[in-house]
Image (cartoon, rainbow, N blue to C red; front, side, top):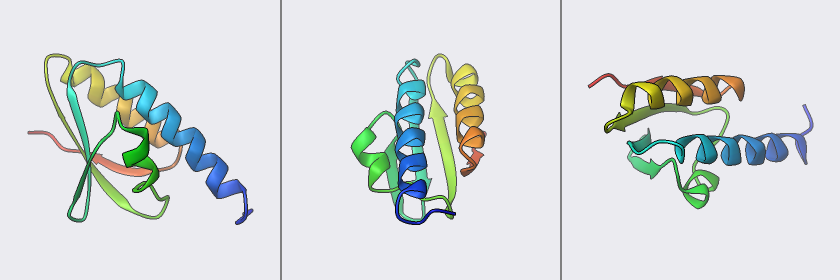
Length: 88
């Protein structure tokens, strides 16, 4: 694995795609890791939080939550990010 560029580049791609996917939905989409809660529509928030080796929980609330959960789970899986969609 290319430490000096490969991980960063794949994270940049993942961050942009995650934020763009989330922005398609009206629902609130929040990523939880440890004691941090990040609005997934915020690219800056994702840049400061998203790492390949962390476990994340995704909380989705709103009128299109089911569609948002499915789309977000798909984009996280595409980038090999470990996320659990919380059913509330």
